[in-house]
Length: 395
Image (cartoon, rainbow, N blue to C red):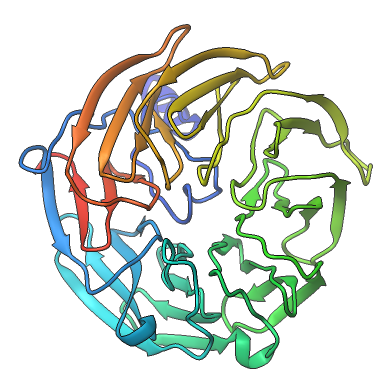
């Protein structure tokens, strides 16, 4: 009996490697770190794949996985006005259902982007799919429509002629949105059951592509070019904010009670209980150089520049090492089992063993254009291109 209790406690504390799900962009909370310990690290376009599934259109969104199902979005048709939400069986890749919608907002965007740029979110019971057109669909796990909102219909001046890419974040019963653009610009918390606004916070009319993350405190952190803002997801109350000059593409990261804000340099701040402004710890080091967001892991910050993986000390921002790789990278890095996975635009995945000095243990080429961030769930790695979803894992 004592042995059984020890095993149960270990499972609950996470000290034994457990299979995990991946509920949104860079994971359920946005940490980009998985506790999976039995992931593959070598594959190619011909070997190491569990399956490869053809997709109906383009997309920058990563797949999300929960409850034995994979959800992903795509866009197709003339000027990408056809919006797709797909559901696949996790084990086999078999398509269970597909729903299509017609865009209600503008489909104008930069050629590198598309209307399926935001990543959906799921809790395993429903999926919430936002498109760059401002269309937001909520579907249950069987594909039944729960509710639908045309955010451009609700707020007609919403506009971003180069494309919107910020992904929603699901926290409890609230779908948190970043709708920052040159028109009606705001943050919003929507009731996941009805789609109605629970709260709405005005923002400067400036284009922003960052995605919020969930902090250990349960607050949701939003970042734009002028401010980092921590919000109570249930009420929309701003708990703290910090003015500055931050990135509008790479999203923030956090760990051990410290928040790391990317910009021209990285800034570390620590929120204080009862204070509406965090303590500023240090500023320095560069871990971004394009679209990829940094990731915190075990006292270090990792990021991708155009042609390097960079590692900084989380305690003071000093650079610990830099490993040359061939970019550029459109997606962000993810970490599992002390390995960093980074996929460049040509479909080459670098697998790097982390430590005092990095070791590239694999270069896995599937020879396909990859712009999406990898997803990790239940012993598999998922890579998404415009044409295919690749599941890397044992058959």
